[in-house]
Length: 166
Ligand SMILES: [Zn+2]
Ligand SMILES: [Zn+2]
Image 1 (cartoon, rainbow, N blue to C red):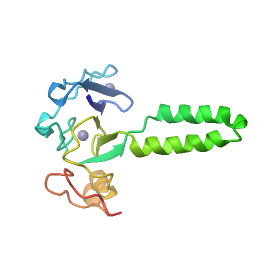
Image 2 (image 1 turned 180 degrees about the vertical axis):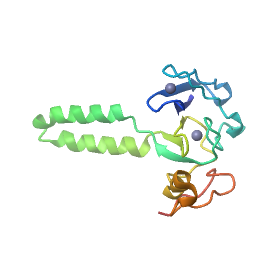
Image 3 (image 1 turned 30 degrees about the horizontal axis):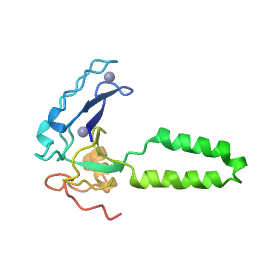
């Protein structure tokens, strides 16, 4: 599976810089943003020898979270087809569509997202593992010292950290 990093443009809010590569070792630096010319240099030091991630390739931050990368267009087209068929199937098609959507979500590919810059990493080795989103980490990074629920970063960031308890 090809490794992909999708980096939001660091320049201005709306634009996204996308880069693709066959394997992490071959990852090329992304093209400068077509809209504003901003550049992203990759932090290759976060790559493990077997192609996993210890941190964010775009900004180097060591905290990432796992998330299902749900192909929204696929989900939407299933719902549309189900809605069109509904009157002819006594609405069973809607139930089938909901089940298919749930399966897609359950078994869809995982992506690793950076807490800081929101870069999305797909197709990297599954180790080290990064747990799902932890709002205490999000809180600390957003509010810093003023965070009410923030918790200090564990050594090494989220690599192989346990899942959050809440
Ligand atoms: Zn831009
Ligand atoms: Zn980042």
